[in-house]
Image (cartoon, rainbow, N blue to C red):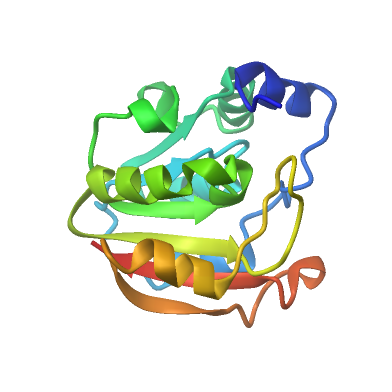
Length: 192
């Protein structure tokens, strides 16, 4: 199976978007609420409908970018949040991105990628972050699907993948996941 633009557009067309909570994820909201620097350059890769980007914008963060391979996902976000800057909606493959950021938010992007791209994901995250930049977000700590997204993972695997290029500041079970994800999410904070 190829997880290309057509694959993801079809998910939106058929409303098979189980990853979309319809709101900002509670662990990410709690993290955003303690951020004080509203000038941070923030990227949300594979952002989809990106309730996180909407929440950040509503709370004074003006330097937020969303990249997605699905143009339809970006159009959905723009239609829902007309004030979101069109120039900050990037229709591109994340692995071809040539910008840098202070903060990257991980929200169901890692688990959407073919597992054979995991090492490339870590390397690319390292390259898109400024010095001392942070990768913060949620990773599934569960055995999920083997042949289609979402793909699962484990704390042990993430530690092994990230420890060579990042300082692992936090990698622990979320205390504030939504009900159907309790016990299945790790909150991560990796520093370049």
